[in-house]
Image (cartoon, rainbow, N blue to C red; front, side, top):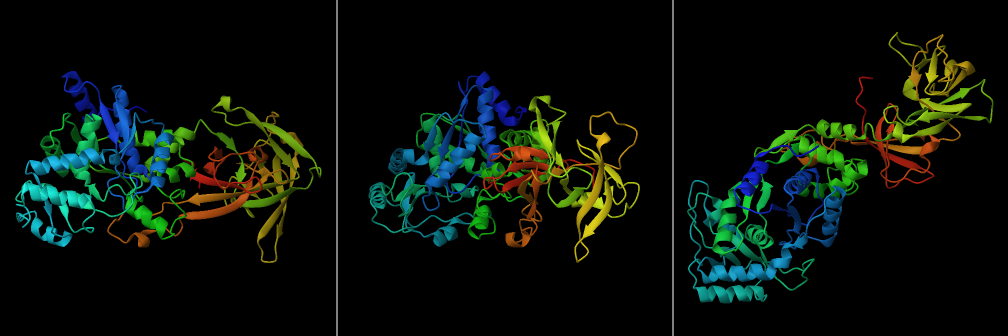
Length: 544
């Protein structure tokens, strides 16, 4: 799927046409303080795809201006996610690469009388800031002399003050109707080791100050961000203008994408991990890119999902079913269709020779001959799904196995159930059946119709397996409710069964369609002695 026309694409076309820019340059600027989730995929794909359309380029720039929560492990995880999505940045950069230049530009603002060192703490600053209907009040430190501000700012850099003791604020307008323009903080003191610069700095620029400077230095033409930064654009432009940046970038905002029953917050996802409510960021229930990857989602399914939602300036919410539809469409003709029995019931075919295994040639997919063929085993002992048997046929609509009823084992023979074996509690543990050797699939036998066609695996050659089934992690999309209360207690269920021998050498993230059960991917924890599969999604089926 290609990127459809949208308002940002139109702006880029016009900017190139009228000579406003000679090349499209975008950037993706994640903060390395968490793993990326499906919401970030929209920003990644939008930036890279728009630049690619116009033969432009996209930089990856880590917004590492707040060392308190940032870590190099997140840097590597983000790089891996972007690579997995199929994109290669023109440059990999860090906001910390520009700390020296950013400091010098802050000094420039002080010399222009456009910045001052303030001693107000956070609570006092909120009181002075005013409200949406009331103008703010000037800080009592707003009129410090340029020389005093220069000296204090240098002392801030030299580590002479404690965290929060002083800040550097832009001097703009405390009566501005836009709260972001009421003398925003542009530098704060943080005494902590930085993942990239170590202990070289103890003052760090705020995002709203550093971001436009970094965009300008890198030659970014279209700085794309989510709609909540709309009110910040005026400050973005103010910084570029007052710092006399030689290149003028422009910020454009697009709506956020929300998905029903899905957490789209790094903070909440981190809470889930740290509270041990999920196994890790790559938990297959998580909407993180690493979690979706482990579950079995493909890069194309993520990309097609994002592109299919369109792009506008309005926040939008789509059903999680749309994401599942995308992976189904991607896998339908690409993956092998094989047999797995998730809830096994033993069947003994009493008239089949003991210790004999028959091998049957079967296509992986009738819709894609390129996938080739395999051999499936058939013998005296097989497993079928428990749900495929009822002791007595309930009605004409029941098209599976019952006592005295004949069905076809898919690709093999007709079998008829003659006797049921139960345990001491009355549970069915085994079916005693007979088969008709003249009914082998493909033999041309057409004189009688079975009561259904069910899949199976041969018992002695099959491989023991675990199947992880998932439901949405959240019961609803009501963000006002406590997150823990919204957690779905049935979000992870485990079944124990068997797969056909063809999967004995399966590898991590290999994807399959298990006949009648859904699409699955081999998990990282899978071992030869116990295979582990994650269900990506169910099949689209009216079968109940």
